[in-house]
Image (tube, rainbow, N blue to C red; front, side, top):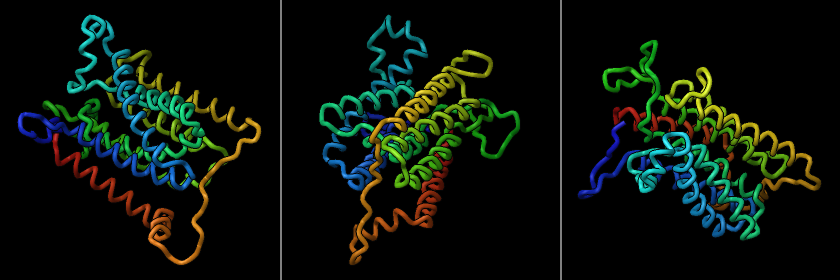
Length: 291
């Protein structure tokens, strides 16, 4: 993956940063659409996305430092701000976003688990798009498959491709299930379990500090996420009076632009077409930029 996409004067514009920005924009648009459907204040939810982005980046950096080389960062704390050199943890980013959700929902009296459900599909989409620009490749291929990527004379697994393909499928699944939840928080719990599983599978072809056999710190983090999500689901199911708000369906009256958009959103054919376009554009972008 070409790290620098282009220069804006003397300023290098990096591919990963551009794709993260595009992913964040797509996520926010989906989140706001879901907030409107589920009756949450869109301005408040937009404010929350900014909180989540800031604390998510902070959490991503902290997570990376804890598992990478914390001693060197303690000796030189200013390295914390060298984001241009890379070093972000997706698990840390998710924890940062969760902290933002807890604080924000308490400050502005928003239902936390309903907000989490609103965020889940957009979050999956944003992660998928952002991963297209990642420049961290996988392990060398034992068998030379045609989708491998040549880096420094070695044919490597394109771990980014594996992850964003699975993330797009996760987004498709969550979008299809968003109106069929039994309790507030169920959609986000599904996201947490499935995304942690995806990350654990992709981790098998990536390099990260190992803790036991082929299992890395990222596997441990993913297992922790799955355990916490399952436990939260059990607790939420047993809460008295727990009732989901899947959103009020649009009344079937005279056709309006909003009605047409809702119909497209719920059409399996349109959803599959959009999924195919996203996957195709992402593959073309990834392989056209080269290693």
